[in-house]
Image 1 (cartoon, rainbow, N blue to C red):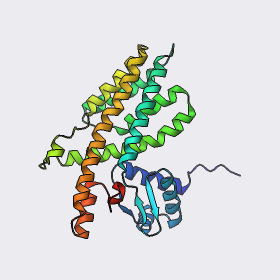
Image 2: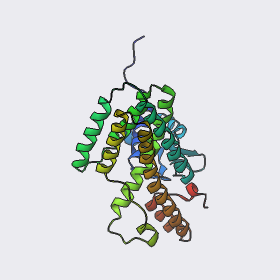
Image 3: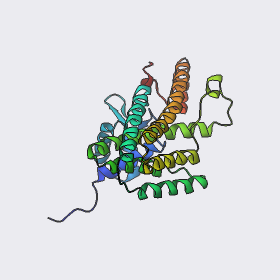
Image 4: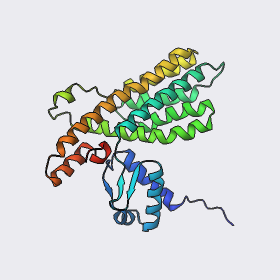
Length: 264
């Protein structure tokens, strides 16, 4: 037998759908038309179905015999719990690395430098952000931790992208009182400054500081994201009083669904 170099078609399809979900091209609750998607990608319906099963296991797609395939809605409790787990893990990893007598920080420093340069150009490099945290996990040498955290980082990227896009596109729109007092996500420059502080604390072997900085870094994002989702939930509740067609249009604009909030 000869080695097969090309990755399975279903894996390629899953990668493209996943990217669209994480980048905000496919919003929570939006229906995935399998036949149209197959035609667009130039594949049969089978690999599309197989790809959706993979994404269902990752929690990015929901499959229902009645509704078909939809992008998994954002669940506030899941997102809140996700950030709590991340904060605990990030703190543990940063503290453990700082406790090591020797540790090569060159890769992390390179990522921070590249991230800062991109931020100064006004670019949002979410790929570098994910790489920074992934390298932290890998540096610990715990393969179980890496396999557990990588999929969770996809969910983080998804919700952060939605918040960034929503708040960025609606700056010119008059906000309600609740929205006015909602905190915003930090700028890319501030984000990379925080990454640099974590790396420096590890380099100086300041265990407590490294742990505290890593936890605070995650907690600040959680505070903004959860506030946004709660505000969206309130809007969704109000939208439920609209006519059916207008209600669904409004829900899609908000990036939330009634199912995701337990409101029917």
